[in-house]
Amino acid sequence: MARFLAQLLTPVLVVLTVVGLIVTAIGDAAKVTGGSAGGNIGGLILHLTWIRDLLDVLLLGVVIWVGFIATRGAGRLGMIVMGAALVALGIAGFIIGDDDAASKGFAGMHYPVAINLLDLIVGLLAVLSGLGTVEDQPAPVR
Image 1 (cartoon, rainbow, N blue to C red):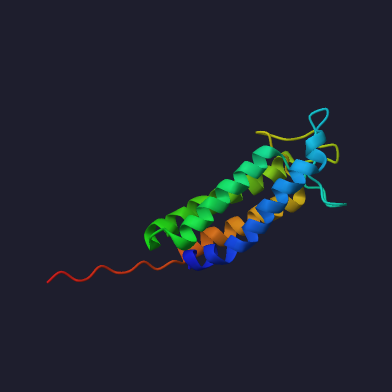
Image 2: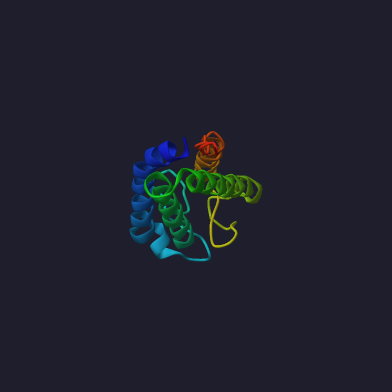
């Protein structure tokens, strides 16, 4: 189950990561002033930062590893850890909050509602897929 979800998430996260990098590079984040972040798409306030983009690249690497390289047991553990980290990040984002001026933030990231929801949904799916992965039973010893 973890491998299947990772394979489904790979193209989605590739698109989100590449678009995030482009929006951060040529968007409002390239003109950061007064500690605020940009990376907004039209009216959708994302407040993307380079640190968030780096985190997205790392998450993409984990998803690719789980989906195409890792053993079933290692992939299961990788998805549980990644999912727990995303859930924690999403919850922390709702606690810290964000505003239109991007004056709130922590660890070089901002936490708008859209990103928090994405983190929570993907994180919960990752944890559930890791917990739902059935490992092969060892052959009986004779």
